Image (cartoon, rainbow, N blue to C red):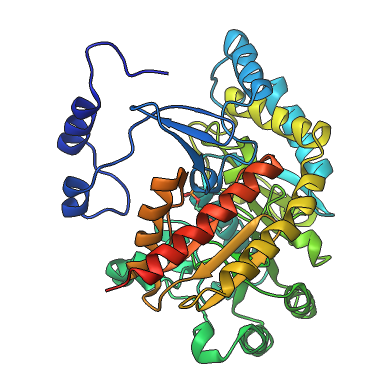
Amino acid sequence: MKLPANLTRADVVALERRHVWPPYTSSERHEATEPLVVVGAEGPWLEDADGRQLLDANSSWWTCTLGHGHPRLRAALTRQAEALMHVAAGGITHAPIALLAQELAAVAPEGLERVHFSDDGSTAVEVAIKVAFQYWQQNGRPRRTRFVTLSGAYHGDTIGAASLASLDEFHRVFHPILFDVVRPPRLGEAGGWDRVFEEVIAQVRARPDEIAAVVVEPLVQGAAGMQVYRPELLRALREATREVDTFLIADEVFSGYGRTGHMWACEAAGVSPDLLCTAKGFTAGVLPMAATLATGRVYDGFRGGAGRALMHGHTFCGNPLGAAVAREVLAVYRDERILERVRAAAPVIRAGFDEIAKLEGVRRVRTLGMIGAADVGDGGYGGRMGWRVFEAALERGAFLRPLGDTVYVVPPLNLDPDLLTRLLDILRDSVRQALTSRD
Ligand SMILES: *Cc1c(COP(=O)(O)O)cnc(C)c1O
Protein backbone atom coordinates (compact mmCIF):
# COMPACT_ATOMS: atom_id res chain seq x y z
CA MET A 1 0.00 0.00 0.00
CA LYS A 2 1.09 3.53 -0.69
CA LEU A 3 0.01 7.09 -0.11
CA PRO A 4 -1.88 8.75 -2.97
CA ALA A 5 0.43 10.11 -5.67
CA ASN A 6 1.93 13.56 -5.01
CA LEU A 7 1.43 13.22 -1.26
CA THR A 8 4.27 12.58 1.17
CA ARG A 9 4.04 11.38 4.74
CA ALA A 10 4.97 14.91 5.84
CA ASP A 11 2.11 16.37 3.77
CA VAL A 12 -0.41 14.12 5.48
CA VAL A 13 0.88 15.02 8.92
CA ALA A 14 0.89 18.75 8.12
CA LEU A 15 -2.69 18.70 6.80
CA GLU A 16 -3.84 16.62 9.72
CA ARG A 17 -2.23 18.99 12.21
CA ARG A 18 -3.79 21.97 10.47
CA HIS A 19 -7.36 20.69 10.13
CA VAL A 20 -8.13 17.55 12.12
CA TRP A 21 -9.31 17.67 15.72
CA PRO A 22 -8.30 14.28 17.11
CA PRO A 23 -9.94 12.54 20.08
CA TYR A 24 -8.48 12.65 23.61
CA THR A 25 -5.38 14.57 22.54
CA SER A 26 -4.16 17.96 23.71
CA SER A 27 -3.33 20.45 20.96
CA GLU A 28 0.26 20.48 22.16
CA ARG A 29 0.51 16.74 21.97
CA HIS A 30 -1.18 16.72 18.58
CA GLU A 31 1.30 19.26 17.26
CA ALA A 32 4.41 17.82 18.88
CA THR A 33 4.18 14.07 18.49
CA GLU A 34 4.68 12.13 15.30
CA PRO A 35 1.51 10.19 14.50
CA LEU A 36 1.69 6.86 12.80
CA VAL A 37 0.58 7.40 9.20
CA VAL A 38 -1.13 4.16 8.27
CA VAL A 39 -1.53 3.30 4.60
CA GLY A 40 -2.89 -0.21 4.89
CA ALA A 41 -3.71 -3.05 7.27
CA GLU A 42 -3.89 -6.80 6.75
CA GLY A 43 -4.62 -9.36 9.41
CA PRO A 44 -2.99 -8.21 12.66
CA TRP A 45 -0.59 -5.86 10.85
CA LEU A 46 -0.70 -2.12 10.38
CA GLU A 47 1.49 -0.78 7.60
CA ASP A 48 2.82 2.75 7.87
CA ALA A 49 3.88 5.17 5.16
CA ASP A 50 7.51 4.06 5.44
CA GLY A 51 6.53 0.45 4.77
CA ARG A 52 6.99 -0.56 8.41
CA GLN A 53 4.77 -3.40 9.69
CA LEU A 54 3.41 -3.13 13.24
CA LEU A 55 1.34 -5.62 15.22
CA ASP A 56 -2.00 -4.03 16.11
CA ALA A 57 -2.00 -5.08 19.76
CA ASN A 58 -5.24 -3.32 20.65
CA SER A 59 -7.22 -4.35 17.55
CA SER A 60 -7.74 -0.69 16.65
CA TRP A 61 -9.47 0.29 19.88
CA TRP A 62 -10.79 -3.22 20.51
CA THR A 63 -12.85 -3.51 17.34
CA CYS A 64 -10.98 -5.64 14.79
CA THR A 65 -11.69 -8.99 16.39
CA LEU A 66 -10.97 -10.75 13.07
CA GLY A 67 -7.93 -8.65 12.19
CA HIS A 68 -7.87 -6.22 9.29
CA GLY A 69 -9.15 -6.84 5.79
CA HIS A 70 -10.64 -10.28 6.43
CA PRO A 71 -11.36 -11.54 2.89
CA ARG A 72 -14.88 -12.72 3.73
CA LEU A 73 -15.80 -9.38 5.30
CA ARG A 74 -14.38 -7.53 2.30
CA ALA A 75 -16.38 -9.73 -0.05
CA ALA A 76 -19.60 -9.32 1.96
CA LEU A 77 -19.17 -5.56 1.94
CA THR A 78 -18.52 -5.48 -1.81
CA ARG A 79 -21.51 -7.70 -2.58
CA GLN A 80 -23.80 -5.53 -0.50
CA ALA A 81 -22.37 -2.33 -1.99
CA GLU A 82 -23.37 -3.59 -5.41
CA ALA A 83 -26.94 -4.33 -4.30
CA LEU A 84 -27.98 -1.60 -1.85
CA MET A 85 -25.78 0.77 0.13
CA HIS A 86 -28.26 2.74 2.19
CA VAL A 87 -31.94 3.30 2.69
CA ALA A 88 -33.72 5.01 5.59
CA ALA A 89 -35.31 2.77 8.22
CA GLY A 90 -38.66 4.65 8.41
CA GLY A 91 -41.31 2.40 6.94
CA ILE A 92 -38.70 0.51 4.90
CA THR A 93 -36.85 -2.69 5.58
CA HIS A 94 -34.47 -5.01 3.75
CA ALA A 95 -33.22 -8.55 3.97
CA PRO A 96 -29.80 -7.83 5.54
CA ILE A 97 -31.33 -6.17 8.57
CA ALA A 98 -34.14 -8.71 9.04
CA LEU A 99 -31.73 -11.62 8.79
CA LEU A 100 -29.16 -9.98 11.03
CA ALA A 101 -31.75 -9.36 13.75
CA GLN A 102 -32.79 -13.00 13.62
CA GLU A 103 -29.21 -14.27 13.69
CA LEU A 104 -28.25 -11.96 16.51
CA ALA A 105 -31.23 -13.03 18.61
CA ALA A 106 -30.20 -16.65 18.02
CA VAL A 107 -26.74 -16.13 19.56
CA ALA A 108 -27.81 -13.64 22.24
CA PRO A 109 -28.25 -14.55 25.91
CA GLU A 110 -31.63 -16.12 26.60
CA GLY A 111 -34.67 -13.92 26.21
CA LEU A 112 -33.10 -11.13 24.16
CA GLU A 113 -35.20 -11.22 21.03
CA ARG A 114 -35.59 -7.62 19.86
CA VAL A 115 -32.86 -5.57 18.23
CA HIS A 116 -32.65 -1.80 17.87
CA PHE A 117 -29.85 -0.77 15.51
CA SER A 118 -27.72 2.34 15.86
CA ASP A 119 -24.21 3.59 15.11
CA ASP A 120 -21.73 3.21 17.94
CA GLY A 121 -21.25 2.02 21.49
CA SER A 122 -22.30 5.27 23.12
CA THR A 123 -25.60 5.35 21.28
CA ALA A 124 -26.24 1.66 21.97
CA VAL A 125 -25.97 2.53 25.68
CA GLU A 126 -27.94 5.73 25.26
CA VAL A 127 -30.77 3.69 23.70
CA ALA A 128 -30.69 1.15 26.54
CA ILE A 129 -31.05 3.78 29.25
CA LYS A 130 -33.78 5.62 27.37
CA VAL A 131 -35.65 2.35 26.88
CA ALA A 132 -35.39 1.53 30.59
CA PHE A 133 -36.48 5.02 31.60
CA GLN A 134 -39.41 5.21 29.20
CA TYR A 135 -40.51 1.67 30.09
CA TRP A 136 -41.06 2.58 33.73
CA GLN A 137 -42.61 5.94 32.86
CA GLN A 138 -45.38 4.23 30.95
CA ASN A 139 -45.69 1.01 32.93
CA GLY A 140 -46.74 2.17 36.35
CA ARG A 141 -43.40 3.03 38.01
CA PRO A 142 -42.75 6.67 36.99
CA ARG A 143 -40.54 7.30 40.01
CA ARG A 144 -38.00 4.88 38.61
CA THR A 145 -35.74 7.48 37.10
CA ARG A 146 -32.29 6.64 38.44
CA PHE A 147 -29.50 4.39 37.26
CA VAL A 148 -26.96 2.48 39.32
CA THR A 149 -23.46 1.93 37.93
CA LEU A 150 -20.20 0.31 39.00
CA SER A 151 -17.03 2.04 40.16
CA GLY A 152 -14.78 2.87 37.24
CA ALA A 153 -17.66 2.59 34.77
CA TYR A 154 -17.20 3.76 31.17
CA HIS A 155 -20.10 3.58 28.75
CA GLY A 156 -19.25 6.11 26.07
CA ASP A 157 -18.97 9.84 25.54
CA THR A 158 -22.45 11.13 24.74
CA ILE A 159 -24.06 13.01 27.62
CA GLY A 160 -26.26 10.14 28.74
CA ALA A 161 -23.51 7.55 28.50
CA ALA A 162 -21.05 9.92 30.17
CA SER A 163 -23.49 10.44 33.03
CA LEU A 164 -23.15 6.74 33.85
CA ALA A 165 -19.36 6.88 33.91
CA SER A 166 -17.13 7.40 36.88
CA LEU A 167 -13.90 8.13 35.07
CA ASP A 168 -13.21 11.69 36.13
CA GLU A 169 -10.30 11.99 33.74
CA PHE A 170 -12.72 11.69 30.81
CA HIS A 171 -15.77 13.61 31.91
CA ARG A 172 -14.97 15.93 34.84
CA VAL A 173 -15.57 19.13 32.89
CA PHE A 174 -19.11 18.05 31.97
CA HIS A 175 -20.30 17.30 35.51
CA PRO A 176 -22.73 20.24 35.65
CA ILE A 177 -24.71 18.92 32.68
CA LEU A 178 -24.59 15.18 33.47
CA PHE A 179 -27.49 13.54 35.28
CA ASP A 180 -27.03 12.10 38.71
CA VAL A 181 -26.57 8.35 39.14
CA VAL A 182 -26.24 6.08 42.14
CA ARG A 183 -22.64 4.93 42.28
CA PRO A 184 -20.66 2.89 44.78
CA PRO A 185 -17.31 4.02 46.24
CA ARG A 186 -14.22 3.78 44.04
CA LEU A 187 -12.73 0.34 43.75
CA GLY A 188 -9.65 1.28 45.80
CA GLU A 189 -11.66 3.02 48.52
CA ALA A 190 -14.16 0.20 48.69
CA GLY A 191 -11.38 -2.34 49.16
CA GLY A 192 -12.12 -4.53 46.17
CA TRP A 193 -14.90 -5.78 43.94
CA ASP A 194 -16.72 -7.77 46.62
CA ARG A 195 -17.37 -4.57 48.57
CA VAL A 196 -18.37 -2.67 45.42
CA PHE A 197 -20.99 -5.25 44.54
CA GLU A 198 -22.22 -5.45 48.15
CA GLU A 199 -22.77 -1.72 48.00
CA VAL A 200 -24.48 -1.82 44.59
CA ILE A 201 -26.76 -4.63 45.70
CA ALA A 202 -27.56 -2.79 48.94
CA GLN A 203 -28.53 0.28 46.90
CA VAL A 204 -30.78 -1.77 44.63
CA ARG A 205 -32.55 -3.23 47.66
CA ALA A 206 -32.77 0.09 49.49
CA ARG A 207 -34.31 2.09 46.61
CA PRO A 208 -36.43 -0.31 44.57
CA ASP A 209 -38.91 2.45 43.76
CA GLU A 210 -36.28 4.75 42.26
CA ILE A 211 -34.04 2.48 40.22
CA ALA A 212 -34.76 2.23 36.49
CA ALA A 213 -31.80 -0.06 35.84
CA VAL A 214 -28.36 -1.15 36.90
CA VAL A 215 -25.79 -0.69 34.13
CA VAL A 216 -22.63 -2.80 34.08
CA GLU A 217 -19.74 -3.81 31.88
CA PRO A 218 -19.93 -7.56 32.52
CA LEU A 219 -16.75 -9.17 33.95
CA VAL A 220 -14.29 -6.67 32.54
CA GLN A 221 -14.14 -2.88 32.45
CA GLY A 222 -12.11 -1.80 29.44
CA ALA A 223 -11.48 1.92 29.71
CA ALA A 224 -11.05 1.69 33.49
CA GLY A 225 -7.81 -0.16 32.73
CA MET A 226 -8.97 -3.73 32.01
CA GLN A 227 -10.38 -4.30 35.51
CA VAL A 228 -11.68 -7.84 35.89
CA TYR A 229 -14.19 -9.17 38.42
CA ARG A 230 -15.60 -12.60 39.29
CA PRO A 231 -18.70 -13.93 37.49
CA GLU A 232 -20.36 -14.76 40.84
CA LEU A 233 -20.60 -11.06 41.60
CA LEU A 234 -22.52 -10.40 38.41
CA ARG A 235 -24.80 -13.33 39.18
CA ALA A 236 -25.57 -11.97 42.65
CA LEU A 237 -26.36 -8.58 41.15
CA ARG A 238 -28.70 -10.16 38.59
CA GLU A 239 -30.53 -11.89 41.43
CA ALA A 240 -30.89 -8.63 43.34
CA THR A 241 -32.35 -6.85 40.30
CA ARG A 242 -34.81 -9.72 39.87
CA GLU A 243 -35.84 -9.55 43.54
CA VAL A 244 -36.96 -5.95 43.12
CA ASP A 245 -37.95 -6.44 39.47
CA THR A 246 -35.78 -3.79 37.92
CA PHE A 247 -33.60 -3.98 34.80
CA LEU A 248 -30.04 -5.09 34.30
CA ILE A 249 -28.32 -3.48 31.31
CA ALA A 250 -25.20 -5.28 30.10
CA ASP A 251 -22.84 -3.04 28.16
CA GLU A 252 -21.03 -5.67 26.09
CA VAL A 253 -19.58 -3.11 23.69
CA PHE A 254 -16.08 -4.26 24.66
CA SER A 255 -16.65 -7.59 26.45
CA GLY A 256 -18.91 -9.13 23.78
CA TYR A 257 -18.04 -10.98 20.60
CA GLY A 258 -15.70 -13.49 22.15
CA ARG A 259 -13.18 -11.25 23.86
CA THR A 260 -13.53 -13.19 27.14
CA GLY A 261 -13.75 -16.64 25.51
CA HIS A 262 -17.56 -16.55 25.51
CA MET A 263 -19.68 -14.91 22.87
CA TRP A 264 -20.92 -12.61 25.65
CA ALA A 265 -19.24 -12.04 29.01
CA CYS A 266 -22.71 -12.41 30.60
CA GLU A 267 -22.69 -16.05 29.51
CA ALA A 268 -19.62 -16.77 31.61
CA ALA A 269 -21.71 -15.75 34.61
CA GLY A 270 -24.83 -17.60 33.43
CA VAL A 271 -26.66 -14.28 33.39
CA SER A 272 -29.22 -12.93 30.93
CA PRO A 273 -29.72 -9.17 31.11
CA ASP A 274 -32.90 -7.29 30.17
CA LEU A 275 -30.98 -5.12 27.73
CA LEU A 276 -27.63 -5.71 26.06
CA CYS A 277 -25.47 -3.27 24.09
CA THR A 278 -23.04 -4.34 21.41
CA ALA A 279 -20.82 -2.32 19.09
CA LYS A 280 -17.04 -2.68 18.80
CA GLY A 281 -16.84 -6.30 17.64
CA PHE A 282 -20.27 -6.16 16.03
CA THR A 283 -18.90 -5.46 12.55
CA ALA A 284 -15.40 -6.57 13.60
CA GLY A 285 -14.27 -2.98 13.24
CA VAL A 286 -15.31 -2.62 9.61
CA LEU A 287 -18.13 -0.09 9.89
CA PRO A 288 -19.61 2.01 12.69
CA MET A 289 -22.70 0.09 13.66
CA ALA A 290 -24.21 -0.94 16.99
CA ALA A 291 -27.22 -2.66 18.46
CA THR A 292 -29.26 -2.68 21.64
CA LEU A 293 -31.00 -5.97 22.34
CA ALA A 294 -34.09 -6.24 24.53
CA THR A 295 -36.33 -8.94 25.94
CA GLY A 296 -39.88 -9.47 24.75
CA ARG A 297 -41.13 -8.11 28.04
CA VAL A 298 -39.27 -4.84 27.56
CA TYR A 299 -40.52 -4.56 23.98
CA ASP A 300 -44.10 -5.24 25.04
CA GLY A 301 -43.93 -2.30 27.45
CA PHE A 302 -44.01 -0.05 24.38
CA ARG A 303 -47.27 -1.40 22.93
CA GLY A 304 -50.39 0.70 23.09
CA GLY A 305 -50.23 3.35 20.40
CA ALA A 306 -48.09 6.17 19.11
CA GLY A 307 -47.82 7.85 22.48
CA ARG A 308 -46.00 4.80 23.85
CA ALA A 309 -43.56 4.17 20.99
CA LEU A 310 -39.83 4.24 21.68
CA MET A 311 -38.80 7.84 21.15
CA HIS A 312 -35.40 7.23 19.64
CA GLY A 313 -33.89 6.71 16.21
CA HIS A 314 -30.86 7.47 14.09
CA THR A 315 -30.55 8.37 10.42
CA PHE A 316 -28.34 5.39 9.66
CA CYS A 317 -30.30 2.93 11.80
CA GLY A 318 -29.96 -0.50 10.19
CA ASN A 319 -27.59 0.50 7.38
CA PRO A 320 -27.43 -2.35 4.83
CA LEU A 321 -23.64 -2.27 4.42
CA GLY A 322 -23.11 -2.61 8.16
CA ALA A 323 -25.78 -5.28 8.39
CA ALA A 324 -24.21 -7.37 5.63
CA VAL A 325 -20.81 -7.19 7.30
CA ALA A 326 -22.26 -7.94 10.75
CA ARG A 327 -23.96 -11.05 9.35
CA GLU A 328 -20.70 -12.22 7.82
CA VAL A 329 -18.91 -11.63 11.12
CA LEU A 330 -21.28 -14.09 12.82
CA ALA A 331 -20.70 -16.60 10.03
CA VAL A 332 -16.91 -16.27 10.29
CA TYR A 333 -17.09 -16.71 14.08
CA ARG A 334 -18.91 -19.99 13.47
CA ASP A 335 -16.81 -21.28 10.57
CA GLU A 336 -13.45 -20.29 12.00
CA ARG A 337 -14.29 -21.39 15.54
CA ILE A 338 -13.24 -18.06 16.96
CA LEU A 339 -14.40 -18.76 20.52
CA GLU A 340 -12.33 -21.93 20.64
CA ARG A 341 -9.31 -20.02 19.46
CA VAL A 342 -9.78 -17.48 22.23
CA ARG A 343 -10.00 -20.26 24.80
CA ALA A 344 -6.76 -21.73 23.46
CA ALA A 345 -5.00 -18.36 23.53
CA ALA A 346 -6.16 -17.39 27.04
CA PRO A 347 -3.63 -19.56 28.97
CA VAL A 348 -0.83 -18.27 26.73
CA ILE A 349 -1.75 -14.70 27.62
CA ARG A 350 -2.01 -15.63 31.29
CA ALA A 351 1.47 -17.22 31.23
CA GLY A 352 2.89 -14.18 29.40
CA PHE A 353 1.53 -11.81 32.01
CA ASP A 354 2.72 -14.04 34.86
CA GLU A 355 6.21 -13.43 33.46
CA ILE A 356 5.60 -9.70 33.18
CA ALA A 357 4.39 -9.67 36.80
CA LYS A 358 7.86 -10.80 37.89
CA LEU A 359 9.54 -7.70 36.44
CA GLU A 360 10.67 -5.20 39.02
CA GLY A 361 8.34 -2.21 39.14
CA VAL A 362 5.25 -3.96 37.73
CA ARG A 363 2.40 -3.39 40.20
CA ARG A 364 -0.39 -5.72 39.19
CA VAL A 365 -1.41 -7.88 36.24
CA ARG A 366 -4.76 -9.41 35.23
CA THR A 367 -5.96 -11.45 32.29
CA LEU A 368 -9.28 -12.73 30.96
CA GLY A 369 -9.81 -14.47 27.63
CA MET A 370 -7.76 -12.52 25.08
CA ILE A 371 -7.17 -9.57 27.38
CA GLY A 372 -4.02 -9.02 29.40
CA ALA A 373 -3.09 -5.90 31.35
CA ALA A 374 -0.30 -4.73 33.63
CA ASP A 375 0.08 -1.58 35.72
CA VAL A 376 3.57 -0.20 35.25
CA GLY A 377 3.13 2.89 37.43
CA ASP A 378 0.76 4.55 39.89
CA GLY A 379 -0.23 7.43 37.62
CA GLY A 380 -3.52 5.93 36.40
CA TYR A 381 -4.85 7.34 33.15
CA GLY A 382 -2.57 10.38 33.42
CA GLY A 383 0.55 8.26 33.98
CA ARG A 384 3.50 8.50 31.60
CA MET A 385 5.23 5.18 32.18
CA GLY A 386 2.79 3.34 29.94
CA TRP A 387 3.81 5.69 27.13
CA ARG A 388 7.45 4.75 27.59
CA VAL A 389 6.46 1.14 27.13
CA PHE A 390 4.52 2.24 24.04
CA GLU A 391 7.64 3.88 22.55
CA ALA A 392 9.80 0.88 23.33
CA ALA A 393 7.26 -1.49 21.76
CA LEU A 394 7.00 0.63 18.63
CA GLU A 395 10.72 0.12 18.08
CA ARG A 396 10.15 -3.61 18.36
CA GLY A 397 7.28 -3.70 15.89
CA ALA A 398 4.09 -3.51 17.99
CA PHE A 399 1.49 -0.78 18.39
CA LEU A 400 0.64 -1.00 22.10
CA ARG A 401 -1.26 2.18 22.93
CA PRO A 402 -1.63 2.23 26.75
CA LEU A 403 -4.31 3.54 29.09
CA GLY A 404 -1.90 5.81 30.97
CA ASP A 405 0.11 3.57 33.27
CA THR A 406 -1.83 0.46 32.28
CA VAL A 407 -0.28 -1.40 29.36
CA TYR A 408 -2.38 -4.09 27.77
CA VAL A 409 -2.94 -6.40 24.84
CA VAL A 410 -6.37 -6.84 23.23
CA PRO A 411 -5.25 -8.49 19.98
CA PRO A 412 -7.38 -9.80 17.11
CA LEU A 413 -9.07 -13.00 18.28
CA ASN A 414 -7.77 -14.93 15.27
CA LEU A 415 -4.16 -13.95 15.91
CA ASP A 416 -1.71 -16.64 14.89
CA PRO A 417 -0.31 -18.38 18.03
CA ASP A 418 3.31 -17.61 17.04
CA LEU A 419 2.49 -13.94 16.68
CA LEU A 420 0.75 -13.93 20.04
CA THR A 421 3.95 -15.27 21.62
CA ARG A 422 5.94 -12.64 19.75
CA LEU A 423 3.60 -9.89 20.94
CA LEU A 424 3.92 -11.03 24.57
CA ASP A 425 7.72 -11.12 24.20
CA ILE A 426 7.71 -7.60 22.79
CA LEU A 427 5.55 -6.39 25.65
CA ARG A 428 7.76 -8.02 28.28
CA ASP A 429 10.96 -6.65 26.77
CA SER A 430 9.43 -3.20 26.38
CA VAL A 431 8.18 -3.11 29.98
CA ARG A 432 11.60 -4.20 31.20
CA GLN A 433 13.31 -1.53 29.12
CA ALA A 434 10.92 1.23 30.19
CA LEU A 435 11.13 0.37 33.88
CA THR A 436 14.90 -0.02 34.04
CA SER A 437 15.70 3.14 32.08
CA ARG A 438 13.56 5.17 34.47
CA ASP A 439 15.15 8.46 35.59
C1 LIG B 1 -15.93 1.89 23.67
C2 LIG B 1 -17.02 1.66 24.65
C3 LIG B 1 -18.22 2.36 24.59
C4 LIG B 1 -18.43 3.50 23.61
O1 LIG B 1 -18.41 3.06 22.29
P1 LIG B 1 -18.17 4.13 21.10
O2 LIG B 1 -18.35 3.32 19.87
O3 LIG B 1 -16.79 4.65 21.30
O4 LIG B 1 -19.18 5.18 21.26
C5 LIG B 1 -19.23 2.03 25.46
N1 LIG B 1 -19.07 1.07 26.37
C6 LIG B 1 -17.93 0.37 26.48
C7 LIG B 1 -17.82 -0.72 27.49
C8 LIG B 1 -16.86 0.64 25.63
O5 LIG B 1 -15.72 -0.03 25.75
